[in-house]
Length: 445
Image (cartoon, one colour):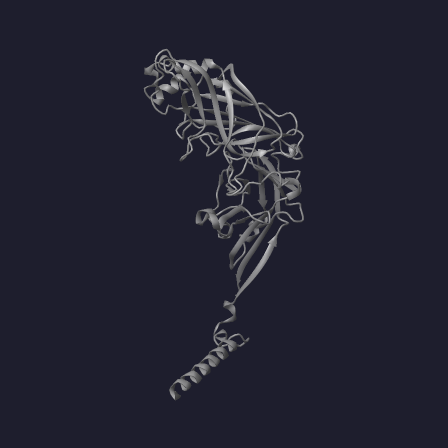
């Protein structure tokens, strides 16, 4: 028993001594500090830079619109961003070799397009028109938003529909259900597919020469309202994809006591060429007069997907850091604030992610080295406080070290061709606008 008590008191004494040691080390003349020469001390400072930042709204350069992860369709007259009209062309592929039977006749043909997300409202009807492609689209060719898909299609209308978009969610999982647009088409197309010779269906390459696909045109909205649909076009996993379905009959089926409904689907797969054409009209918008110029700086800047708008950013103050001696950048974070009122964020969701790209002396865009280090470290995602924050620490250090030059930046959407989201940000002239928050270490000599 005496041994245990003795150990207990020794432990208490050791603990008190340890605490006393660390307390002493927090004093101005603590042990160890006096061994460091004052010339080696490091001073850490914080700086919030706003005055040297300028921002301007530019049109996005033409973007690629083929085989996007999600295709788009519709027309939206945005009260702030003007008109956006998106058309869609696609190939349909054989699932297997169709066996139509003897004396097959097409009864009807329908185009089924699925979607789950919309950008706009659910009260304005959309009008879609469908035409057969006369010229092919190629999955190996690059197409941009200015492609004239209408010129590739026949002038003969196959079908049209007035459609009011809808969104419905599963109350349990909050997942969005697939919604369906069903467009009846002229039976002549169904008969063309039924009458295809067996040699024209021996494989998909040959079949796509016979039936090149469809062009779906959106009628332009003339009043505020409308919607851009995010199509679930290509098959993925258990989802079979949007499709063209021919309903038909033949002699064998007619001979049955209870004839079946015969059908054959032609589907959109990940191997199908899928192309969007996109047109923007910024007439009458608040930024329209100052587009693409480094003047007329506004308190607001505008960023839009679908090859719409981006912001050009200059941070002139970065150049002065290049001549700074004994400076190490601990963190450099660029902060953009959403104008929630101008954006109407409850009605129009801002992009979930933006990109901040660097310009070289030729005006070519590239991602800063911070992105290569880690996309999470680099940032750019929409935060709960409605800010987008970018870590450009490494890029700024490269400017100081003379490895990189300062020719400006662009702020764009991350998903340029598969979503229609847009956002209004507070510009450099705004009191709560763009700011660069720098934490740096200065080595005292």
